[in-house]
Length: 581
Image 1 (spheres, rainbow, N blue to C red):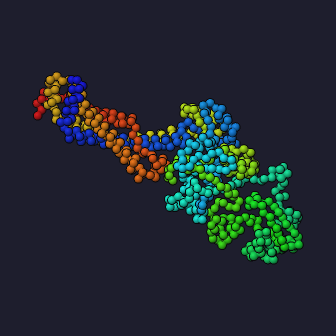
Image 2 (cartoon, one colour):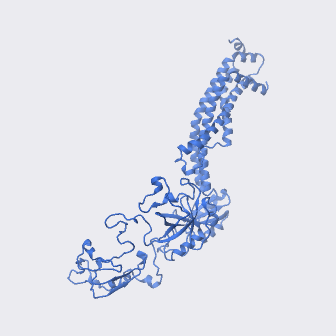
Image 3 (cartoon, rainbow, N blue to C red):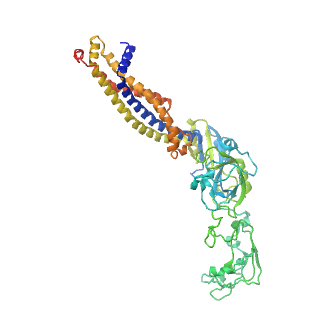
């Protein structure tokens, strides 16, 4: 028999038993769709992850920081280091990043700190914007691209300390593009002395006290001295505040400071002790304090910056909150105006690599920092030497090293690490994550395979029943000289047709279910789960190779399920088969 004859007879036999064939094919459809949809879920999530990582830098980039995770070791990143990396083989370019943090304020809202990342002009123009445009290089002022989630994630109401977005799921009612937006210039704890002369460096700390106290002899004080104060003080300072009434609260009743031996060590009112000191290190202002009359040390106000009714924690002396309780803009913080030139694309719930930070032209940021900080002030985020002094030149927080090909990434990374720097690539993370997704796909595919197993049993049952019903037909074919191989092929072809038709219909059903999952189920019932991948992510993806694999697999399952019934048909005795009623 020719192949065409075998295929024609197989289709004719299936058509004669339409209902049984339809029910069997339906089982294959369900089994095929189950496997395809389950695998498509794993594939879709993996593709979303890879696309997210690719948009954050791709597979040919190496992120380099200092010799440890913090990047603040002796392996600092500067222009000399950047040139060293550029001279390496397979390195196309090096993109520096400079990170600076500052508090920000707009209207009645503010943030404790927002990261400003300075990047080259070329990278700024690659950021997708919802509105506005990339800032140009400026001299002294600073224009920013603000991340689409900065306003909701970082800004709180100054008066209450509450974050509107987290409390009510609504953004603060301000327009970043119209502003005005202010930033706060702060100085990190460390070496901030503005006097860098050698003489100043050699002066002991004890010699830097007020001259009125420096002249006191050592023997005037002892560990056993009684520093109680009587209630006749009448101290005042330049701002006109009378502190005499505070002595009762402080438990001090006298302006006379007496030693254990009865020596009177009070400060006489006849002596004019006018002192004028630079206290900018404490309050940020040049403050002149004058003591007059019979003044004693117990009632001297050492810090009188801003509202004197506020304590260090921003609480009034009567225990009530003040409107400035939650503000970061204390009197020692210099307020500067910033400009918002653009906002990154996306809603307040869309995540990209640019969502949570602000971005500026790196040259503009350098100029801005040099304008607002002296050489001896520690800029937030900048490293210091062992003595706590800042470096003369600004140090970068990170380099992005672009390699010519992904196959060379490992070699370049190893060379960078051998130099003592810390580097990492997206490729390593992707490979590890793909292994995890392979396990997930195997589990999901196994669940779908259960339905296909049921379909295979259904095919075997249908073909077995077919051999019993066609026993006499099989006997006649053998008597007429039909070969055993042809009989086997005919039954196998029928089983294969059932699997093939079920596979095609199953793939069509899978595409329908995939569309439903992506357009209706995911946005409405899985929004929180897929939020990190963006709003337009497809949780189900059916590539072409999966379509072909599903059809081939279902056809093979049909042939395997029909093999044993076909073997039974070849073993029937011709005479017994003809006599069978």
